[in-house]
Length: 90
Image (cartoon, rainbow, N blue to C red; front, side):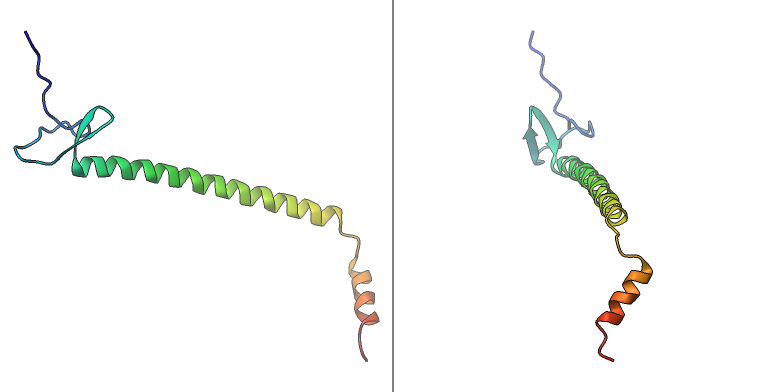
């Protein structure tokens, strides 16, 4: 006895209609719109992960910048004023 696999979409489980375009990917059959949706969802997930990582990198850079600025700030406001008067032309 031989079993024939039902021809239905691996994503939505609806059967394929006669003459309908069927796409095969990684051992499964898909309707064209279903495969497009699945690929889009993967891209959306990757995009969200990249946005999250970008925010982390920007925040880390901001922390490094602020720490550097606080640790290496040698001029006080009075020093800055006296430096400005030193370079004035009048």
